[in-house]
Amino acid sequence: MGILNLTENSFYDGGKYNSLKKCLYQCEKMIKEGAHFIDIGVHSSKPGSKIIDPKHEKILLLPYLYEILKEFNEVFFSIDTYNSEIAKISIEMGISIINDISAGSIDDKMFSILSKYDIPYIMMHMKGKPDVMQKNPEYDNVTGEIIDFLSKKIKYANKLGIKNIIIDPGFGFGKSESHNYELLKNLRDFEKFNYPILVGLSRKSMIYKKLNTSPEFALNGTTAIHAWALERGAKILRVHDVKEAKECITLWKSLQ
Image (cartoon, rainbow, N blue to C red; front, side, top):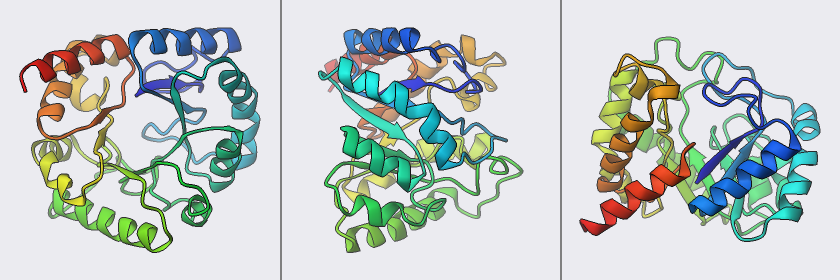
């Protein structure tokens, strides 16, 4: 899954693709490099960021989305949103997947909206909201608590008829560096749900801070961590660098 950030303040590539020409070029590049999905977002969810109002999100997203869907039909597009109104509009425009970093916790109408459509829903764990999630997050058992959170969300979603679910443990969303590595070690525990596991690890602080570098120089570390995640059951890698991720997957598959 390639990442298309259309926001100014993303932690890595903010502002690089916030013109239509650059946006369409990046989509084409990721498709050529082998992306199966492209995840589009217009709001930042990095630590300290504020919740975006759906009216503002609509203004930022829809002009790009219309042109993207008109231009490309050889790949699935997802929308990175926690607003049910945006999810509904996007689905009706032709979006294939909804990626919700809050698993319905920010907008309690999300599940009822998605129950009307049979499309995949990426359900991620986040402790708190982006503006406060990294202020000393604490767990007694990080893996167990996230499994419990997802169990409750999945049960509620299933009750409403939502069956097409992808789970995301939420690396970096309300977790310390040690929490992230504990989750990564225990990634196979999430296979109990029998839903595909997505991991969003690309160039994150758990990698670049461990290596005393920056997001710009964290590709090698990202590739190493991706290989570990694949070995531990990850089915979807959400990445900034599609070509390198595809190479990692190809080599990993040759060892199976």
